[in-house]
Image 1 (cartoon, one colour):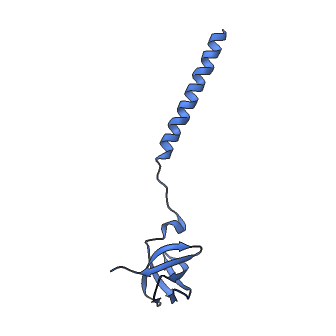
Image 2 (cartoon, helix red, strand yellow; image 1 turned 180 degrees about the vertical axis):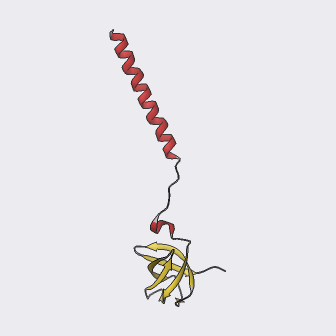
Image 3 (tube, one colour; image 1 turned 30 degrees about the vertical axis):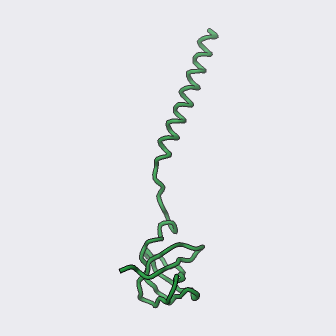
Length: 98
């Protein structure tokens, strides 16, 4: 009787730890889905309010309005740019490559 209980407990623990290990291995390979600001670098933006490297302007990316600074030069309203990175709540933009 005692042997049966001990064996059952040991088998249960082995199954528990094996399943935990397998589930951790499976979930480790899931790709991370980028959302919100993490997906913006590399996207194209339309300048709606002039901006420079010192003057904060506004851009439209994916239908959302963001404040933006230029890496260099000046961007006027209507000009297209590319998002380089997100710095706080501002987008840093550069000239759109041809």
